[in-house]
View (cartoon, one colour):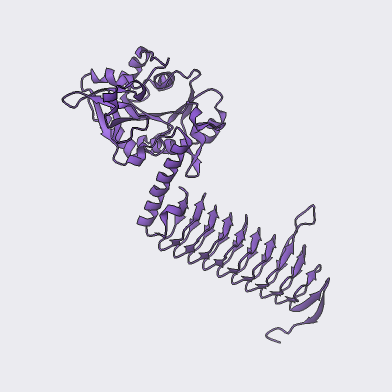
Length: 451
């Protein structure tokens, strides 16, 4: 019958001092709960169940791929939280994995080892432990002279001698289901008025087979989040984990400490990421690119052999061999075709720049379509908004737009056409024509190459 997973996410998280539920605070660009859900799903092969408190609609909306939510109406401790799942989970599987939602760095592989160990274990419980010099509030694992686990003592109730113990209870367990459900109602009430799941360790130790333990090898996995300081520590550890993965995959990070790569980002081999660069959302970057320094790329696609220097790219697409910046800004819907060059302090929004377009510095192109090999002079502005509606500008292939040209949309500049510097274009310019002035007028027709 396999193993189900239960995530405990009903805590108030008062030490975060926030109106946002603790489990929804962002970590690596995703809610903290997301990481635990994904780890449990990979460990068991099934969508987990999540215990939430009352009035937790935001948690329901943000949790994503879960089997079901189970409400803990009274917050009476971790043992009580698991008991609320009995009606849905008793008899559903032979084993139950229980994990706290404030342990977002536990790897799927670690939880899978925990499950596999318990499935091969004769006793009723396998728990996750770690050796550490800093206890970080975790309970201590008590063993007898033969090294057998006897109990877990919470830090608040531990004696000075017990606090000196370095083996910590990480707070992830895999139980044999038939044993667990019969034990929960017998848990004693703690001095704090709560039912601790950790009290089951002492009971399991008295059963045939006793309690098994799986040790966490990576100390970063044991970072629990109870405060914003802990959240920052978890963020740094997660960032290092992601960065290490990409460096092993053939991506150069010049300064990993100042490189921020989101969990959904994908990078091509031999790409170089320079310092103070943030790659966020569902960004995809091809091979052989050079990104940064001081660059933000969010939810964008960048092709092979591109250069993006000290710029902001949001919701945009760059095809191969595109070169932008420094201080360029690509906004939602910007599409730069192969070989486009965009100079410093330029901005593009909801526009397509055809292959080989050159766009000078200090220019704004919005709601426009620009043909191949067109040249956009410095200071060019597409005046796309009339106060009520947006209008489009079309610039034909091979056109030359003089510096400081104002293109008042809707307007079309024909193929091979030219505008003089400082022109204000309010009417269409025919193919292979020259327009100058304020307002611009056509002064002559250019000869085509074949004429």
